[in-house]
Image (cartoon, rainbow, N blue to C red; front, side, top):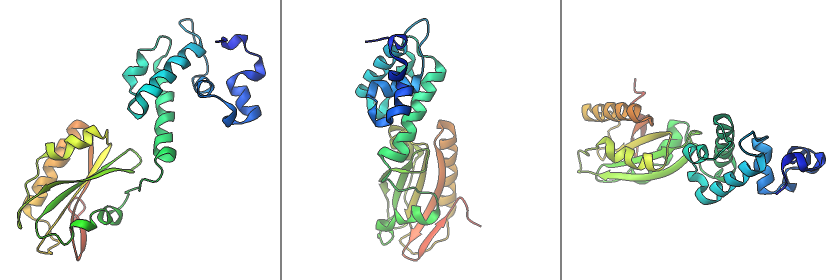
Amino acid sequence: MKKMQDRHPLDRPREKLARKGVASLSDLELLMAIIGSGNAQADVGQISKRVLKLIRTHGADLRYSDLAAITGLGAAKITVILANLELARRYLIESDRPIIDCLDKAAQQCDNIRDKKQEHVVCLTLDGANRLIAKRIITVGTLTASLVHPREIFTDAITDRAASVIVAHNHPSGQLKASTADREVTRRLSEAGNLIGISLIDHLIVTKHGAVSIINER
C-alpha cells in the first residue's frame, strides 16, 4: 500500500473527494480522509487499515479502548472516528427509529398497556439523540401494585448502551394521579440512573383516559 507522500496529490483522499465526490472513495480512503495524517509511529494508511479491520469486526460495538490499542492513533483522532460513526448511526443508518422527545410520543409507545387489567411496567431505552432503541415490558404486577427494582430497568439499558430511559406503567383503575409508591419508585430510579450515567427522562402513568408525567407533575 502506498504511503500518503507517495500518492499523486490529486489522488490523496481529501483531494479526490473534492474532485470526484465522496462516493468515489473506498472504505479505506474514507478513513484516511477522516484521520487525515499519520505520525512518526505509523503512516495514515497503516492506521486506517487497522481501524477498518476493527470496524468490520466490531461494527456498532466498536469502543474507545479498541481504537486506543492501535499504534499511532491518539485521543483526538479516536474521538473524531467515534463521533463520525455515532452521527451516521443516529441520523443515517437507523433514521427510521422514532425520536421520543415529548410526553405524547412516549405515551404512544405505551398504547398497548392502557387497558390492561394488571399493572404493566414498560421501559423505553433511548440513544443520545432521543431515538428509540428498544421498548420492553419489564414487569407485570397485580391489579393494584407492581414492584420495580432499578436493576430490572437498567440491566437492559446498559446492554443497549442507552443514554437515557423513559419508564411508564398503567393504572388499571383509570386513575391518572400518582401514588406515594409511584413517586418513591421514580425517586429510586432517578438516583440509580444518576449513579450509572443513564438518565431517567420521565416516568409516565398511562390509562385509557390519557397520560401524565410523575417527574413533571404539578
